[in-house]
Length: 280
Ligand SMILES: [Zn+2]
Image 1 (tube, rainbow, N blue to C red):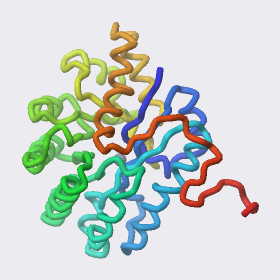
Image 2 (image 1 turned 180 degrees about the vertical axis):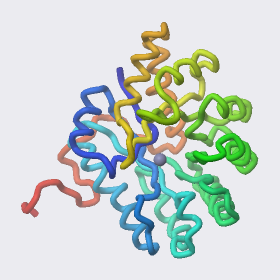
Image 3 (image 1 turned 90 degrees about the horizontal axis):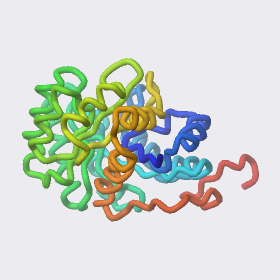
Image 4 (image 1 turned 45 degrees about the horizontal axis):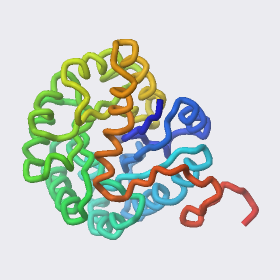
């Protein structure tokens, strides 16, 4: 089984996770920029983080045979902090970088006017740069939040939009809108593999993406593999599994023209990063 996790925060995971992911068949990931738990206090804090997603993290992933790409954005939660707003002026030069395959995560957290402004501005950036967009939907008020999200992205080509963190209540409206549908599988909240299989049975595999959204919270980077196993047990074919866990994310992020899925070179230099301590 070959797996592409289209939404995972590897910055907050260990080297052991990379080893287990590779053993489970995970060969490629997209890491969207997000909130770090501790609020950032200035724009420079974002830029160091973006540089890490462009240099250090792809280097670390390559040591374990995993291709790493990223999506960059001002996340919805920090869009509310005036100290962070200036990152929107820095984003254009970052969106030109080779391993940036989308703008994200954008969208709503608490659905404030500040979030509206950041969301709109970043959709415009995505259009200008010809990049797909990864849209986070709020965990509270999910139905209302998803409906409002779809209103905002209406001006976009729906094929360039992935609406994430969906469930049984929100999948239908996103399917109707023609956007790609993302599902985050967590150990004890939101979607689990059984519920995911039921959704795939009802809605099919087209434009469907499954991710672990693993971060520093309770989460599991092998949840994508569990969904693949559950699909096979429920009678889906290996080709169906490959479509959801590999072909769909490749098709979606491939629209950036920047996916590179050949075997990563462990010794390659990623913006000058090395894991060799004290040797240079
Ligand atoms: Zn996330």
